[in-house]
Length: 347
Image (tube, rainbow, N blue to C red; front, top):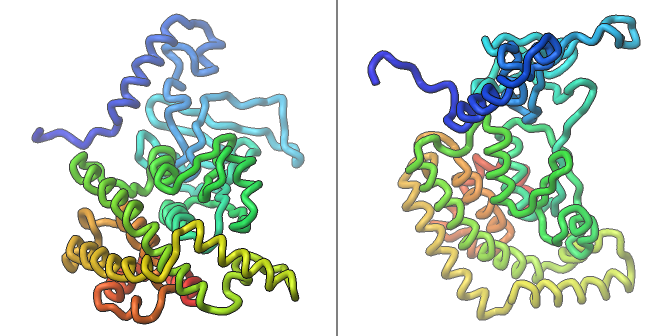
């Protein structure tokens, strides 16, 4: 409509604010006013404003004059006002106000003395884990990693109740599956967005991301492992880095046998995979059509998935990498995953 501006408040947030206002209408008095639970309180937006980097939900509070820092100064905590003003001292102020990020101060991830750090449980060379790491980096989120050995899944099972990686731990929540993690990040840490706002483009993006998961994820993994099995000592280095002597030799033989069995590797299967990956690479290139991105004119989850799940082809046999379509896809993906990932697979 002419003369209007873009909506600042998503419908879900607006509805939630209306519900809160009605609920707070039953409260009155100075205590409710100061705590943010009264209908006339200036802290109506408490809990609806989040740190744009880490997702922390701010709550309206007052200065607690009975507590002091070690240097004797008073501890001032965040005020949230319905006019959009805020006051903060010593804690993060990189706020997402209905999706609009405040740009005056940076987020250090500290909220009232509490540090919130995301943890990614991963196998470093897993392309699904690389997919999640790249999304975390694109969103500017601080995270730590917990690397597990592919043959020892006790840590990931204890955390998530299942044995596959990646698993993202955010506070008390554990999210498994790379696509589920990306969608969780998009919902919880929406800035910068990696999904288009337009519903049609968003659906297209998710469809393309799903195609990469269904087609490229198993295909590129099999091709990379098939070639890796032919390089002496590689399985031992990846799976049993601490083994020596006879034990290393035995574990290497058992490891190669387990990889072949788990992923159904065989010479016949590899020949079919080589033909299939050429077709898949050409399909991806046709979809790109010479553009930088799969959907629209900005990087999306579809691009992250395609680039990350293509990356194991750097570890495939040279005649696979040198195919014109495969090489063009790898050259495109290099700009998204970075040289570190390229080196990881080539070495």
